[in-house]
Amino acid sequence: MKNEKRLNLLLCCYIGVLLFSMVYGNYSIWQDELFTLNAIQGTYQQFMETIVADFVHPPLYYLLLKGWNDCLRVVGLNPIVAAKLFSIVLFVVAIVFGSKKILKEYGETAALYFVCFACMTQAIGYAVEIRMYSLSACCTLFAYLYAGDILRHETEKNWILFTVFSILAAYTHYFAVVSLSFVYFYLLYVGWKRKNVKPWVLCFGMTCIAYMPWLITMFMNRNHMQHDFYQPITIVHVGRFVILPFFNHNALLTVFVFALFMSITIGLTNKYGDAFTKVCCFNCLYDCIIGVVLSLTLHKFFNGKYLLPGFMVYLLGLAILVSRMKRQTYVKQIVCVLMVLCSMQYGIFEYKEMNGARQVLAILNDPEVKEVQAANKQLDEILTYYRNVFGIDDSRSGEANKKLVMIYSDFDTLDPSFNARLLNDGIYCGARISVYEIKE
Image (cartoon, rainbow, N blue to C red; front, side, top):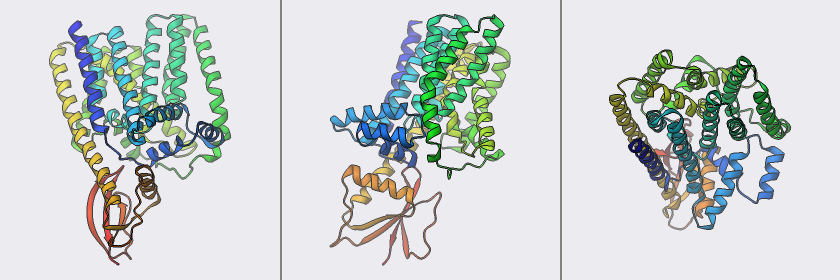
């Protein structure tokens, strides 16, 4: 038992070091991350006025991130690195404290599998983004853990902690609310069977009361929602959403990992699954169905990344199921090898993206470059942010004679009227970027 605890701690430290090494010096951001960084600028008074006046995102992550970045700004840390580090810390908190809680309630084997699974998949990718996914996954995971405690030991403490983490999760992401509604329905069913629904009514009532201020604010600001944000809802797109959490920037590896996880889930749920593990494992399927229904009836906004708040819950259920298998030693070794391989593969991609962002900064600082343009609004805003944060003045004259234009290779095409020569292709900065020199 002692050795297993040490192994879990070692794995958690490994995750922290791995993520920190991926993010340190990584200035690569994309449009949603830029929105987050712009949202936390200014004074607290301006920030609160923005939240009340026209904010449509649950505010908890932004409030915490602003406090974090303001503190680290005092010691001179770059705001991009500081914000990415905040997401990493939240992910590591979920892994470390989540595994310790699992170790206590479900055994050391389940805790080890949970750490391994969480390190293998796209969850590790979103753990370095300047978005709310790490915080939402952390709060949702702990809400489900205490829901499991309620099912085994229905105490006042467990109900209070479940309520607190449910409220925190709801204030981070709307789909955390969807994910939690699944376990709320199940707890109501259990309470009905036990003929004791009073704790559930109190918990649900307190959650609704605590969330009501934001619901009112969101309703008042609903006209500020980006109705141009549109996601097609087809079988192909929904399939991509389902497979997204397993994406590792390698098509073959993605399909292999997804097929492996689905096979294990279906097989073990039938053989070893109890009610709680089934709720955990089918959580993402429930989220996907609700997302598709809401998109078809309201506005086509659903995206695969919205499944990530509940994805940690799926990993929790799967880890418990795998820990109940017989002859676990060989499976454990295979999982550890897969964890290392997938982490290395994702780390290689992240290094390329980090190096690509530095190339973009080098181009902006190049004294031979007279002007750098972006072919679309999103990329232009990112370049403008880089100029402001790093104090870059690229409005040069004199000997500088190169005029460059950057485009998103995956989405844009170069204006055919340009007399251009391709200089660099495959630079990563949120997406693949191509750089062309414009001949006068």
